[in-house]
Amino acid sequence: MFLKIISFFLPWPLRRRVLQQWFGYKIHASARIGLAWVFPRKLVMGANSRIDHFTVAIHLDQIEMAKDATIGRGNWITGFPTQSDSSHFKHQFERRAELRLGEAAAITKNHHLDCTNAIEIGRFATIAGYQSQFLTHSIDVLENRQDSTPISIGEYAFVGTNVVVLGGAKLPACSVLGAKSLLNKVYAQEWTLYGGVPAKPIQEIPRSAKYFTRQEGFVY
Image (cartoon, rainbow, N blue to C red; front, side, top):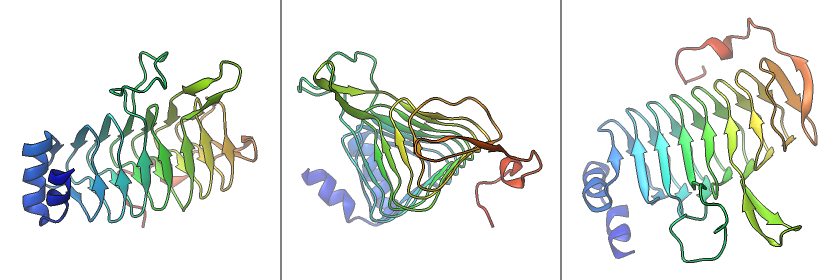
């Protein structure tokens, strides 16, 4: 904890070197972490990736961010690491407590991601708006134990504001999850707007929609 506190207050160029030397993180020279408490067991940040101010990311096996991936301000990213003496999740031998963002994937701000199991956000996908919850774990009332399942967000997907995504859910590539929806199952049909509680297919998305063919992450 003492080393984490020291590193937190260092200027970024020095802080990056310290994070690599003391914690073994792999951070590209062009990547950056703001005033954020980010201490997974393993951290990999590609070129021009960024984690903004006031984000907390702890109790994770790994965060991996491809080039140009971003995590915005005020996000709360936690999990339950696999290297633990706790009896929780001992029945899940292949569980991975990690967050993976593909190239130019973006998480905006003020979201909560529970990475007790893996959350994968595909390249050029956007977790937009505010106050969405991604919850990979819950209590299995039949077995009376904690259980977890991964979440997958496909390439070029767009997740609207204030949604809930539960463990085991999958949003396919080139699709949209409408604001305030609850996604609790696997869907495979691409180029589709999903919405509602629980979410279901609503309508097809035109193949001419420019969001799904852009070559850079930033949306003007």
